[in-house]
Length: 257
Image 1: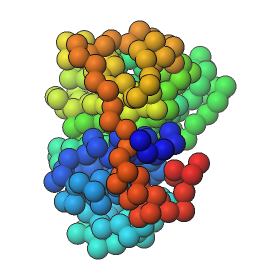
Image 2: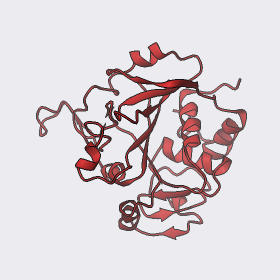
Image 3: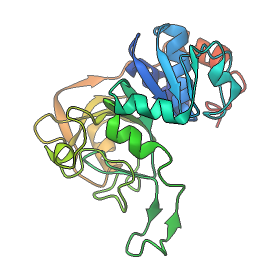
Image 4: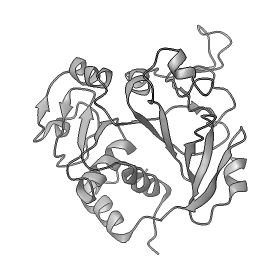
C-alpha cells in the first residue's frame, strides 16, 4: 500500500468526485489540486471555472489563487467575474468546492464569525463569503473538503455564510433557492459524508481505511446518520500519488503543508 499524508488523501478523494465533461467552480487550495489531478488522470474534458473569469484552462502548474495567470492558460474563455457567476445563475455549473470554519448537519457553512451573539463584536472574525454564498445557492452540487473535528462539525453554525439545506427538507426551496441544488458530499480526513434523501441530514457513506464509525462520531458535535451500506474508501493509488507529487504539486505547496 502506498504511503500518503492526510492532505494527499483529501486531494485524491476530492478529485474522484469530479466527472468528465462536467463544469466545476474551483477555489484556492485543495480544490485546485483536486481539479488539476482529475484533469490529468480521469477527466480530460472537465471545464474548470475560476472566480476571476477564466473557463476551461489546461493548467500547466498549480495556481496559487483564482486570479493566477495559470488559470487562464489555453482557456476557452478569459472573461469576468460577472460572467462566471451568471453561469451559476443560469444553472450551468455542476459542482462547486467550498469550505468554512464551521459546518452543521444540514451542510450550512460559516466563514464569517465565531461567537455570534453580537455581530459587531464576535470572538473571531473571518473573511466572510466572497463568492461562496452565490456558489452554494446556485450550483447543482456543493462539495466540501475539510479536516474533521467537533469544533468544525457543530450542532448549529454561529452564522450561515453559505446555505446548505438550511433547516432540512424543503427549506432551500422555501427560501427561494433553485430546486435540486445544494450539498452533495463532504470529503474529510476520516470519511466521506453525504446527505439523507428523506431528512437532508448529514450521513456517513464511506469510512477511510482503518477508521471506525465511533472515531468519526467522536469528531462530530452532532449525531451523524449512517448509510444503509457503509463503504470503505479506496486509498490513493500509486498512479494518483505519482501525478499529484510530480505533475500537480511538485513543490508541496498544498500537500506539503
